Image 1 (cartoon, helix red, strand yellow):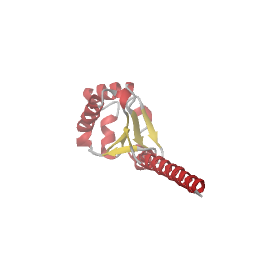
Image 2 (cartoon, helix red, strand yellow):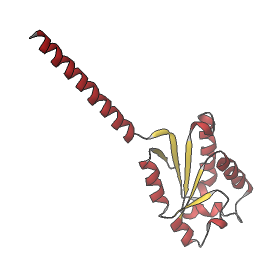
Image 3 (cartoon, one colour):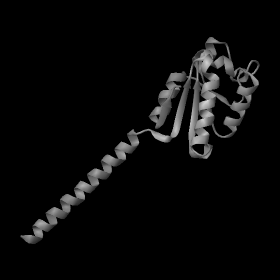
Length: 149
């Protein structure tokens, strides 16, 4: 009888450990990953502020190798990234950040509304064909933290 109790206790302990590990993995899958961040930019007057935030983010975590950042731009803010009209500071920052791995997404709906193609934008942008907000939701589903400064 003593062996049976010992076996039942052991089986219950193993079951509890497995259940705990499964809950832990599920919680990790549902939790955003601090090493992946999506910045949402729609306001033209916040372009320099957001680019400054991205610079500070890279510096704060020890460089671009420690975080994956995506920038999703739509609405009026996209005008600041038109190659022909972008100010030199925006051009420099975008070029540097893209070279460091920043993912640049331009809302496909905004591009259509503003009659823009990727060739009209600074180098490095990709079109979020289904829309900027859809791209943000996709990134969040992949564990990206959402920031809208």
